[in-house]
Length: 272
Length: 282
Ligand SMILES: Nc1ncnc2c1ncn2[C@@H]1O[C@H](COP(=O)(O)OP(=O)(O)OP(=O)(O)O)[C@@H](O)[C@H]1O
Ligand SMILES: [Mg+2]
Image (cartoon, rainbow over all chains, first blue to last red; front, side, top):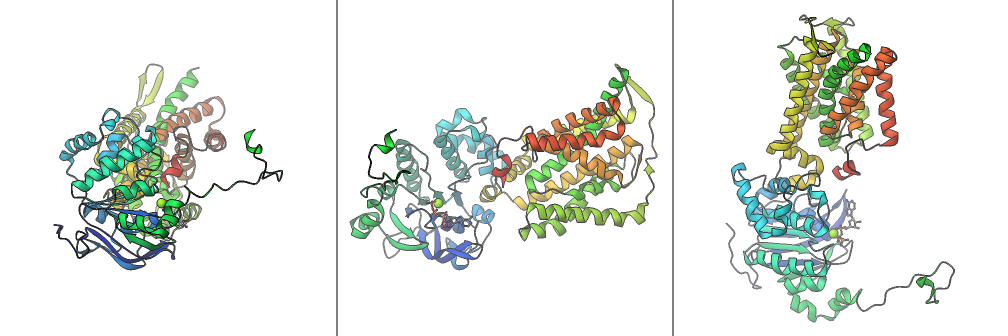
């Protein structure tokens, strides 16, 4: 199926690849001329500021948004503008940033829908296998999915996408709303384990540092275009990267709000 | 008092008829996000007991075709809900006017009459009416079984809850929606035949008042909520018949409409809908 042969830069042959993709909403391009690839066993992290077009890029890759120009390939097959159902059939699993579960359905039904393409007789067995990966879900199979906590919900969303055992996993901010500890464990234990199982993992992360620690390749998206890309170690060495992403928000002081009575200098104002 | 008991019996019958239509209605709205006012016309078929299936099948195919060739193209163009309501209103007017020369203004009656009265406790109902109640309960159970226990039914609920995610899971949402139109059209065809059976005589204009009643039940239960529609049908069916008994039968639809307006003001999301259930689906 997927040929795991190394390419010139030491990366595996891509399982999913986008070439010069431009897309957006209603004809207005948000993502412009972006190329990205992820191969089996790799974790490719996309980072970038809010509104950079990260989610838009992922939605384009999984067939939710139209590709205006450029091409998308799964393995060697051109799947540009194929329907989302077709990408699911071809082994591309996607966990969106929001609306990532079927809220009125039970946890078990969510998993069953994740496995919709499996033969019905295989479902119970597969649900059991997947809940072994996320044991926290096991006791709540009958619960309505909108009654889960933020962390449980993300686990369900990822468990749901694992039902089909996809070769490519696309995760949009899987650690958003998770405690630092849980976020760390999700990236280290689950995401790395999946890459260890030779899945191609493409993820968007706000936690740039945490992402760089697990990623084998990183793309920095700014204003809809690729600003930088490379191995995380190389990126970390670059001064401009440090300034662009890791510095922002950690070293620059938080902007102070002018107080309504004009006393912006008064440090006591906020204490009331 | 006996008048009220009789009204209660009629309420049971009405609610059965309403439930058939309202559940179809609400499923259609929940899953396809649209309201089809042309709905009630599907029941123009003239049939007897055995042909009831024919009425359902006619409704099913008809609603499927309307969706495929009329609504779906509009929806693809991104017509807003209000626009769609107008389109469906236009369709319903066109169809009912087109039907007039064919079926005529006159009432038609089903040939088979079971005016034989059966007594259940203090209630006296005709065999027809009991059959309607049994039929409606059977259909409600079938809808419940479909939605809860079959893969297709779960896919319908998944598609209603989050259509994009459903596609990402590989669910063929278009086919699922087609099946919803078939089923809801069938329910409506059945409701039409049954309503005509209950009222003994029937003409094409009977549909409009019935539409309001079914719509009220669907909205009362929370649009897009099949179980809500069942409860809505129970409430509306009983309240309209009881009000007819203590007040005047002419006000049945006024009462139904009044409930509809009250619900929209006091609890626009309906009895069963969770807060934002509709927004979450859109
Ligand atoms: N459905 C939509 N319709 C129109 N514009 C949209 C839509 N979704 C996003 N946008 C716009 O596209 C741009 C990119 O949004 P996108 O969601 O891809 O950003 P992002 O990089 O994922 O940001 P975040 O880190 O906040 O999730 C933003 O300017 C946003 O306002
Ligand atoms: Mg995003």
